[in-house]
Length: 197
Image (cartoon, rainbow, N blue to C red; front, side, top):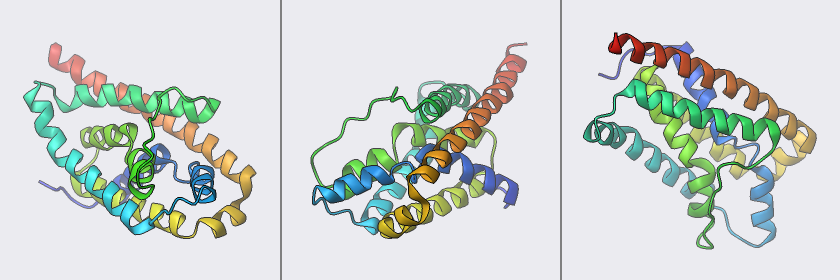
């Protein structure tokens, strides 16, 4: 059941994923890699990231059933991950460490973990508790398209936005993501409590 297209849900899914992926916040990292003569292929990076997202989105549910975990419980756990990511964005502190490999830059670290990182993968699966599958997938595809545009036109976007605006966007997305995490926690903890009673 893919569900019906709902533009509010599409926007919500897009916003959550955009806040977690934080492609604009990664611009300084991309610039630094290019200064180190590392080639970043936007198409390759985004296709690999999309593949990771889709594999986790559809196979992840089976893994949950294997371990006897329902979607509401996973969403609560996911809300904690989103909460930590939001705190990272607001305070500018790295809490969840990403280990980078010295291999091809398009796949590691661009596709994983900068685009399809643990937080984004967890967040994507957590959305299934609140949104229809078709709306989540459309939101995901829009995010991948945004990521492609940003990476493909990195220099122009960096000059257009400037460091100050990128900083402000990161903090703004952090606050919104924090509110989404709290909302996700409250909605799904109520579902769990209702099942217990």
